[in-house]
Image (cartoon, rainbow, N blue to C red):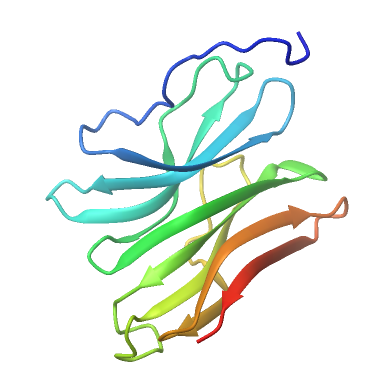
Length: 173
């Protein structure tokens, strides 16, 4: 009805595993009248109890009435990483091409920043060319900062010709 009223369908599907946690910072993208993508922070434990920090995408193929299980667009060890402030967008020239960016708070000390406290923050992004079924295996680093400097709050846009643009906030030292 053009936005005159809304229906609450309840929470987005967290998937079948008891220890899945959808952590917020949601974003939604529309590929067509039926296909929607919902991205957000996603934390989970693997089969032996190790924590994972992730950004997930749920897909709806019925106009947002129901949502599939979350698919991790990116996941990193929860012992060393906190993934925050995801942003997603769809390529208008190819609706199966989706990008997801996020901030990686990386305390692994294997990130090029050494033992610089509080570690490394980086704006990274991943890409799917098949509507969110699979994702690039290695994230692309747009920018990183070590120690007291930080980056946060990335946003993505794709031009009508498929060129990706990314912005972020740089918090100097």
